[in-house]
Length: 256
Image (cartoon, helix red, strand yellow):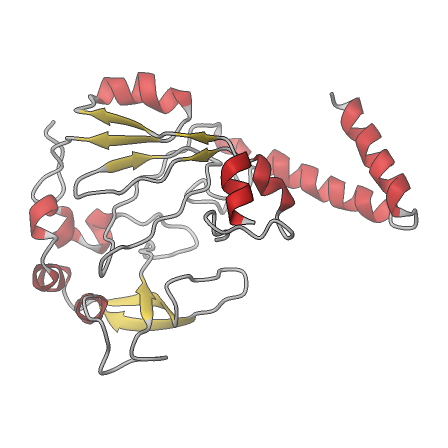
């Protein structure tokens, strides 16, 4: 199944750019709505000092943080194969740098995931300057859902039609710009990954859910359309499958 997927899918190499200016990013890269890797930017001492677990723990301090704890590196956010727990940030950093734990929640090889949130997760956007101000000082400007390598094509048959941008190995200081509606996945090849995310909203505010602080949820017109579609499908349930397929095809042609 995997080899069949690899041979049939369209694959495109991700563009790699260096020393990109703000004007280039805003007017030439961001507007294309395609993934791109950006190298060679001066983002401050974090590139060097964040290599040290001791440094991270000391600078981040003992602030309590909420984490996901999973027995495997592949957390499943649908079936919830993880626990929610809390740890001091410096203790989390210490555990993240160890092969095996002497103190643990699930097992000695458990994995941790910290997703920083705002002071009020429902309304506040996470801001490294507020949640981790000491670490923020190190950053400056010079001015599965699905396993794509081994997809279940019986469960996701349309994945074969997706265009896959080629995998890349990321080094310190690299930017990866991916746009709205682009699925992405990052795998840590060493002990840990430490990344700072910047979210953009490029559409009118009224197109976003009022509770969508990051612009990650389905846009409101799409959500309304899905609700209408759900009602339409339920209205057709008393028909046989063949008639339903023809009916759905007819509806799609009306929009064509």
